[in-house]
Image (cartoon, rainbow, N blue to C red):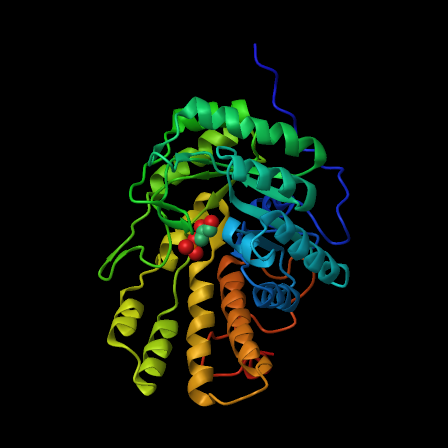
Amino acid sequence: MKKQPPILNKSRKFSDNMASAHALVVKAKRGEKGNTNGKGYAVPAFNVTTFQGINAAMKAFELLGSSGLMAFSNSALKHFGDGDQVFGLDVATSYIEKMAKRSSVKIATHLDHGDYVTEPGRKVLQAAVQRLTSVMADNSTDHANKVAMPLQDNIDLTREVVDMAHPVGLSVEGELGVLAGEEDEDTKSDFSTYTNPDELKQFVEETGVLMLAPTIGTMHGPNKGKPGHKVKLNIPLAHELLATANEINNDIVFVAHGASTLYPQVVEYAVEQLDKMSGRDEDKQKWNDFVGTDWDQIEGLIEAGFCKINTDTENRQTFLSALLGAINENSAKIDIRWYDNQGTDALIKSYIQKLIMAGNYGVWHEPKMNVEKFKFDLGISLSDLISQSV
Ligand code: 13P
């Protein structure tokens, strides 16, 4: 008989104010905020791809007293490390650890879509176990052959990561099923599959993962369906899968990939800016073709118990839209920090909006702004939006 998977070492001490992603997400599943227990909420996992992204996320977490989860894709690590992902891990982590030391909230750093299938993937995952507080071992798709990974291979590869990460206190997220859309630079899928509840039971029991991304119809990237034909999630399946997982271990938390909603005002603002600068029609068309997942669908998932919701695309779109506005407003500023700040402020607004929607505020301290009155608006400065909401 196979050995039992190792349990997560919860006594591991990370650097000041750093925590494993599972510790934050299981708190959300239980509805824990301060010393109270209420309705469950979700922790958005923001994919940070630049230092601006990290700064913006930290600011939003601080303003709201949120549990903070920052995730790194392989291509983001390449960017941080000037082409070297392992160096990128070190650079980004050192920066976040320094910021976390003076923070009043708890922060987790997570490898997004790490794989244990390819040689480069294994190398990054092994380094991530040394530097981050949580990792994803996504072995659900054989990207080279564009097919789903056989279940037993996915189990065996994911188990290897759990064996390495759990004893040193890092939570591991597995994936079961194939998700459509653009995952990262080199990993895209034209097809998707739903997660099978029987397979989920076997996967969870044999790998020991406490975080799992089952597929229930979400998609990665900016084109989730087509305008007028949005993605519809399989919420009944989400409930069935979580009930299956809870029977095995109530501490298992579910993760929704592809949780970007895309705010309509971001598209309107970008197209308005492109009109003003006589931008190309094909670019305007691209913006108009972007489709996110409707928030009521994501809310349905949170109610079904998905407590980690991955958002990348909508934040990139917000940053770019704000940058187009900044360039229109003034395209001859030598102080380039001004443009940087315009994009970063927009990112902060986008993060605040998502954290409020997910109910992830007041977890570590009372929010420093009025969450009821906050209104996401690219045309109003961040400081005005916050002072209006106090
Ligand atoms: P979006 O493309 O919807 O932002 O999803 C990102 C994601 O799931 C990263 O893992």
